[in-house]
Image (cartoon, rainbow, N blue to C red):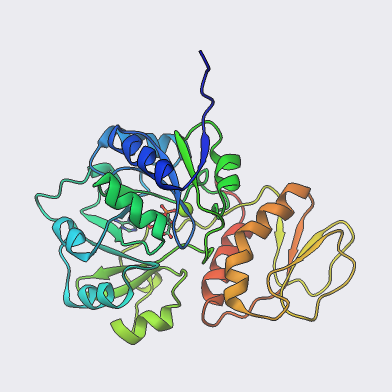
Length: 322
Ligand code: TXA
Ligand code: MG
């Protein structure tokens, strides 16, 4: 008899998706692509399956998970939408926007997805493989990014495998994720919208629909996942570098790149933030594997640059835990 080695990486074709859906119904863990990053999924109504996500990621249990659903109608069976949330869902779903809303009293989702809070984070992913998996499984899927807690998010099946080796039942390989940065997370202070995490949809775009966003620093609610150190490579990061030494690697941006790095990768030679977005985590993974300190050039902070700078700041922050 052959001993199956976990995790199995399989193409996200019809057979792969069918088996992944069955694994999810049986309480297993399946990594799958979304338009932002890969998710590590489990049946969101199954407490044991959700607990297995925390164990696989070694994620602290105070940090709640995003629940992925097929459409807004399904989301409304789990959470209470206010008028601004309704507008945001119609404008951005399916897509890279997560809404944190009060759970309904009869909400069948595991309490663990909310980490004990009375709210739940919901998102309708746009990636066709994620959509198909949701439809075939017939379940809401709890899925944080498919990386070990605190580490760089996975934008390819190979990243998932490196980060969660042996702790996932199946990895559905759907190629590189198109956006490359996690969803923008919006919560509400009573009915006032709050930016909990900058992400793949620029906050200025969200404000066109929601009106001005508050930031967690000036109001009471916080996203428990917004730890100072996150997305951390093993190598140290030096931000806003204008020069580089031969003992460093360089993460560059734009056409005007300092010479002398051992290895240099350019997020976007054309200075295109969307391209930079899609390349960020993959290039961090590649440079990190070299094992030298990483110098990072300055990235503009407007539009998509907001989320890129947020990730880089956290990646460079002193590590809180080992
Ligand atoms: O693009 C994405 O959002 C990816 C894909 C897989 O959908 N998912 C993702 O999940 O990035 P995760 O778990 O790595 O990040 C979820 C963020 C965390 O910062 C978490 O603290 C916050 O959402 N969050 C989840 N539920 C929350 C809640 N009830 N209240 C406040 N923040 C919440
Ligand atoms: Mg994450």
